[in-house]
Image 1 (cartoon, helix red, strand yellow):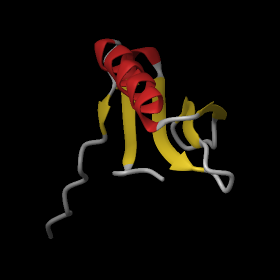
Image 2: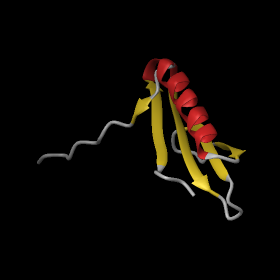
Image 3: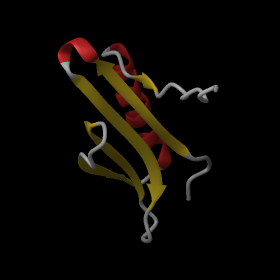
Length: 88
């Protein structure tokens, strides 16, 4: 069982390079009691690719989660900026 939810969605965009990427991470429990770290990535607007890592304990999953987040942040990924309301 997971003690706290771990989920994040981050993006990296650069109009000059026609780049619009996303990266999503989530730690979940499986039906069999294992801990699963799911990651999904691809071009914004697509389903992208997915990979799952299975662990016997939450600490190992959190360690990989934080390591992947650190790597993505250094490559320019950041949380999606809120869209402001259009004023008329």
